[in-house]
Image 1 (cartoon, helix red, strand yellow):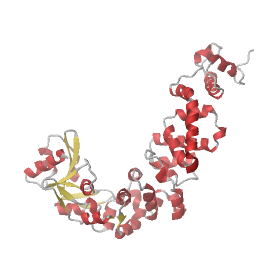
Image 2 (cartoon, rainbow, N blue to C red; image 1 turned 135 degrees about the vertical axis):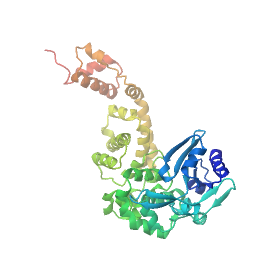
Image 3 (spheres, rainbow, N blue to C red; image 1 turned 45 degrees about the vertical axis):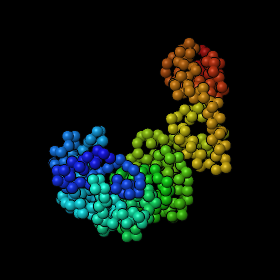
Image 4 (cartoon, one colour; image 1 turned 90 degrees about the vertical axis):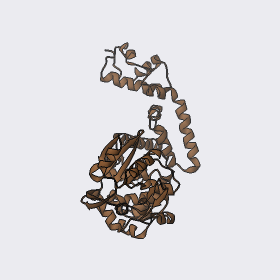
Length: 408
């Protein structure tokens, strides 16, 4: 905070106005300490660049300069008025202005306040403090205009409501519902999933997803949900708030589509532009669900590979949520015991250190190739499923297989 205060003092000394702005001010009034400080000033961007030795013009056309002090980064934006929005996301033209006019272009009243760190006072042109006290999310000015300027604000309003447990003011709610079907193509799916991912970190995530449906936004993100009633959505989301905090957001989203097979789940991940790692996680989670469904049919070899996967701990915790509460401890205990029993094999899989190696098979006149690969895999299965640690005994079992070469 001292570095941000230094920026303000420097600008004020040069005869300019400068304040902290936006989310930091809101969080300060809510007693939520934060080091994420944005600043606003009457100084033109060229002046900001000239006053500080380390700056980056990250959005100079919009009056935004990044000032770096002691490895800390601060966005310093010149007070402005957004004149024209063409793509429903960002202004195509701006004019530099005053603090009061600048506050009018912001999204919600609780985000539209300034703080003077020198005088230690709040500057509030939008009645943000009153709405903060009343626990209300309200668009600044005409909510239809604010939403048309940036349609991501519809999602953000619900995220803010979920984060602070605030109500969305009725005119703002009406405007969101009225413009819900304009979410695409104005807002990229990546931006939407970023907002929903942030929501997933809050306690009221299930409530937020239900609100997205009530405001008809969720159906526009996922058209397959249009056929569902509110009660059906609530039923599908019943367990969402019980998932581990570290679970990726796709886990909760998949609860909306219980009928999806793995191919459809992967297609959904690609629609949401998720990473390959997230797709790998969804694939492994699906495997875990299939193992739990037919637990008695899964052999030790398959369980050993399952437990050796780096996603295992998280997936087991997610699967446990779907188990009835009264037997959840037993479920976890069974897996803990099985994992302990299979530890020697799990460690070998993790370290890529099989008991029977290619050298053992070469001594049996097996040449490198497809057959050797098949036999090495079968050797691991035999070792685990028959609890054998002696390579010679494993090879004796291999010789009983149909794929073992017959003597001519």
